[in-house]
Amino acid sequence: MTYISVISCEVNTMSIIETNFERCVGCRDCVGACPSPLANYVKTLDDGRQVIEIDESKCIACGECVRRCTHGGRDYNDDTEKFFKALGDRKMVIIAHPSIKAAFGKKWQAVLRWFKQNGSDGIYDGALGSDICTWSYCKQIDAGTTRKVVSQHCPAIVRYMEIYHPDQIGDVAPIASPMSCEAVYIRDYIKKNYAVAVLSPCPAMKLEFTESGHVEYNVTFKRLKEHFHRQRIEFRDADNDSMLYDFDDQAQGAMGGIYSAPGGLRYNLVINDPGLVAVSSDGVDTVYRDLEEYLSTDRDKRADVFEALSCAGGCGMGIGAFDKDDVSPLEIKSIHRKVEIDARSRRKVSLNGLDKQFKLFEDRLNPRSLARKFENCEKEPPAKEAIDRNLAELEAFLAAHESKAEAPAAAPSPTPAPAADDGQLAAYREMIERMTGSAADAKQTSDTLSAEIAGLREQLGRLDNNNKQSASIASIMENILAKVTDFCSQSTSLDENSLPQVVSILEKLKAAMTSLSTYLGDAEAAGSAIEGSADSLQAGIARLGDVSADMMNMNSGE
Image (cartoon, rainbow, N blue to C red):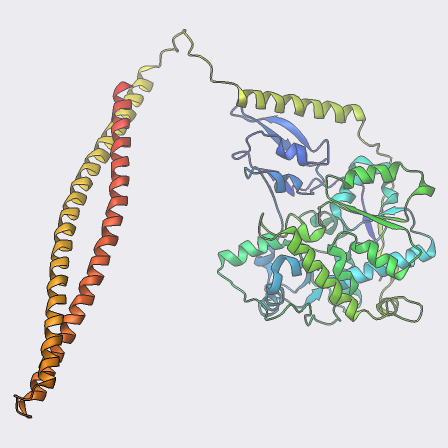
């Protein structure tokens, strides 16, 4: 049976990116980061607060607002919780996105082995799906059916095209994403028609998975790490930088492993078709501007393939890959390079220069099963006036918000505040009494602790003096005993029977004095450490007393 994914240009309104109203402070970070001009709007909450909300029908799920927000006001959803509830209860295979090597570093093989031992019915390489995707591109380009296209493997880019260029949706490459290509391979060739989960760096992948039906669970690396942390599941680093893993039922992917890096698709295409003109762009600050330029360029002047990735640094830097500051972009680049070196060492080519894997795909897959067909749409792109109006409203709100935040405190109004009712006054007085009582208790506790510390200091002083006197006496006794021992050892007046006994007794006394001196030295050091701790504690207690007194005075003034 042949399957063709039919992707509607009607936007999926699934809530992937969401606003946390408790943490949103109404700043401009999310709006400034967002490449979709209609995705944000001003919303007034029931309590009168105004926040920036998401229009799900215009959100492209790139997650850049999540990356930029410093207040925790934006976050994303994925299928991790549902996935773990289903794991082991149903037949399920897992596809590992190539960027798992960057997300988990030297632990990535151990993570996959854990899934193999804990309910998965197969672990498969997403890099092979990328190789299949490259093969599908080459076939369609050779057939003349795919030219002058925008790449399809970044779901945020596809969503942007659906919203803002529905009339040009046919310019998106009509090919399934690499992860869907792998899912088709598992279903059609390996004959495992099971539920499919993808371990991925990208929340937006859920869009294509839902529309195509090829994948059921999108499990991001970040949420996966959080799950392992909660369950106290830990993994050891591998002893080396090996990029190999024994995947089920298939060979490991080759050059598809570099799809995670910027220009990964472009590189894969040109090594198989050197005459192809392919260009690439990545990062919200540049890719959407470049995309607009590409779409507005005369068709005959366009590059054959425009590879567009929403995340700067490629999929390895996806919003679902890791926490902020978990790994640096330079580390990701280094891992991408190691992946490329490994893939190039394993790539085999035929006499005509094509990847030898292509012959296997030709024998095993029907290209129509990898087709991604978008429905024709009569829908017009959003009017420029609507975009300008929404942006103007956002700017007005943000400007007012910033002016309010920066304005100096207003002078006290001469008009008296409205009188509170008796119930409010009673509650206020009760609160003041509780605060005053708590402050008084804290002050009393502070005074008591101060007295205790003073007593401790006095005892430490006495102990220190005693230790110093004892150490002095011990040192004197040790010297005397040493001299007596030497004298007895050399004396000729003692008989040979009593001399060894006297010397033995004196040596034991000398050893005892030495031990006592060492002990007293340690005691002196411990006393000094305790004295230092007492100083710090005394300072803290004094501060507690001052704060408590201030609270009592303030409450009395109220």
